[in-house]
Length: 126
Image 1 (tube, rainbow, N blue to C red):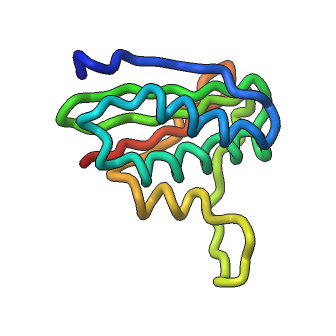
Image 2 (cartoon, helix red, strand yellow):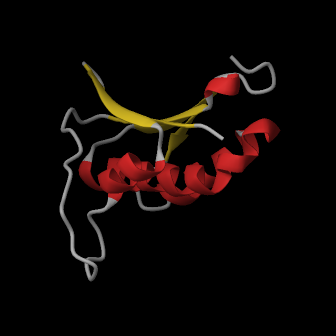
Image 3 (cartoon, rainbow, N blue to C red):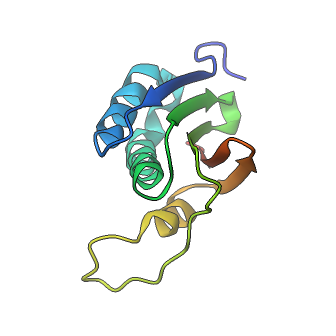
């Protein structure tokens, strides 16, 4: 656990501005020693937020938990139990890469389903 960054969570709007709000939340909240993962974190947090809005259901929340040397855990929760789907997309596709990006850019990722919906999470390490 990080002494500089405690677990923080924010409610996101249930529209496409959720990505912008998630990025702003991340920039304000991510501790300095995790700054090397900022670019990947911004991209993945945006993807998770947009997917929650487009394919999930309100309410949508974003959470950040710094695990010290273990990295940072990003999570987005929405009110739908429907799990993300891995799509094979061509180079011309304009969407459908969210799960692929999680697989390629994070050290670990997953989905936790609970009675209130699901949480898509990923872990990034410097």
